Length: 195
Image (cartoon, rainbow, N blue to C red; front, side, top):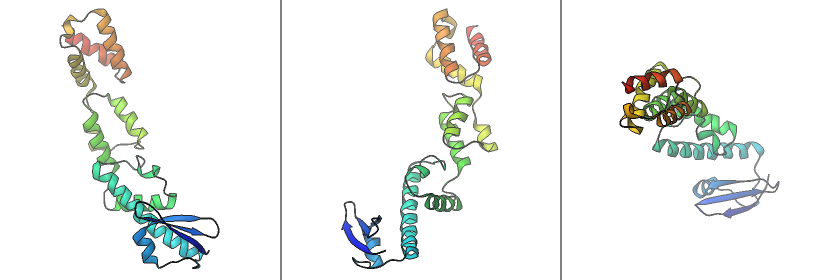
């Protein structure tokens, strides 16, 4: 493959264009370090090695930047950025190797953060959406008690639950059911608070 053009782009990037119409973008310093110029020939193997090296470095930097802010699950953002499958897998294995990516830790933090106002069912559903189908024993212990959570939510929404009229009671029951709480737990707590 022959290089027919090297374009300087914004954000310190360089695009290398080949005669086949293919192109790829490198950080400017990496492009300069290769020593490639217009008219140079690149074998398929050399091109793939260069691409893999720069793509892995870029994907690692992107992943570490995401993980600076908060824990992520494997599926959460790392797979959605547009890197090819092999690069993504390499970076995910690298992140697991250094324990930067840990789905059990993510699940525990997610449960602790959301346990105040969400039902066990909703928390587990949201974790499944983030790619975590099973959680460890430590994270399982963090899951909130349904009745205690319902009690807190009812008292927060209606400071005097014993004085609720039927309409307000039905609204709270519907609201809690939509949040994923079981009706038996809802009625038990409302009965206890109504005394």
